[in-house]
Image 1 (cartoon, rainbow, N blue to C red):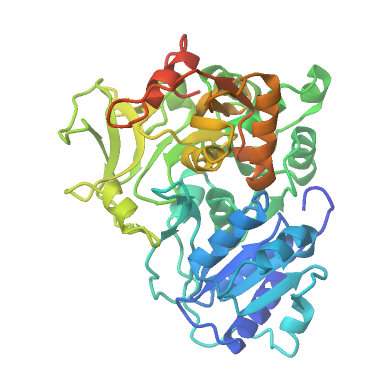
Image 2 (image 1 turned 180 degrees about the vertical axis):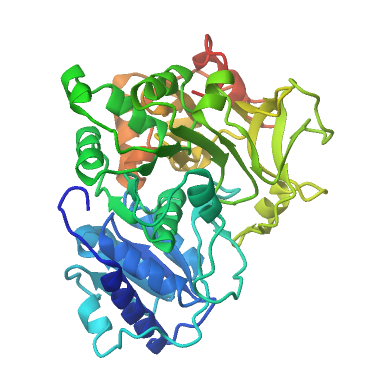
Length: 497
């Protein structure tokens, strides 16, 4: 652990995860069942994740920044039979417990929570020997649904014996050169897909993992030097915050141990990435993909310097740039980015409509981004077909916020979308049409923002609200959100920052 200095050995991780796995089996959970994990970044997250992974279970880490209502929805929707929660988030866990009906086992981790069984008692009497007939489980992370509610990205269980490698392994070992004896830093929350999956791939490889309880730019640089970190994964916002450190702090950073870094999750401004390559050297890689796993691009620093702004060439699957009518576009012409040729299968849990929308008749999937290929096959992203907001590498779905705001008695209509933010990439903006007779202004803005923060995770809430006498809707009731959003992106080369 980067902050507190806690160390967990592989022997301890093996023993603890095996005991949890046996306890889950004794509790009646069988391959294909589901557990939910409501924990901040702590060692126990890996003990529980590996317990589920080796037991053939689905497991869903839940964002600890959600409200109790939001977290309870995920627990219910995924069908969790067991909920593990860290005592550090006891108020949230207690709120969730009062709203979920299908959970049979509530277990408190690293401390006590009212109404939860202590984890020590849950595993009492269990052997640390590996359970019999272990098979690979799978994480099920949550993304957006067609109604604005998040939906689980469900992959079929392979039925393969526990110990089978996962798809990230070749990227980490063959491309980035990670191996036993090397050290990887994870500065991002483990309730996101990439930090969790890449960290567990480090475990599969036998390296040392340095986990940050939360990201702090100075603590991160100190940990890299102290632990002689060789590899790691970041999001662009972290680069921005490290670049903003004082000159003497940056000068004191050695960084000579670093061999290969990767970033993803959000577009990286060209100048930010150029400065990072100048500071850390040509060791910074980038990929473009989604939790869905339909395809993946990859680009190294030398390639990026020759193709600035690109997110790379295909590494998994095939890239197709398609018009909205379906036909493929020529080089240099923008269209919907689709992936084909991947053997990875997925569906959106409990949402066949969204699953069907994501695939075309050829079986090509999309993350609803717009971009083009150059003559060398490098992909450049320029826009999104949906209005998903990516702020600090975190996906925010406007409809969820709109659905909440529109029921406020002082709101007649509302549009939510992302606007440029130099540090976070995008920030959440709401444009509101006040109800008849309501005066727009700072007081109403403050009231509506507070109203959002009372029920939604704070990172989803508008940072600011503008007001319009009437929002641009057609005769059919369709909101022309693009008309509003484009005003805020004037002067930018793309609609992504």
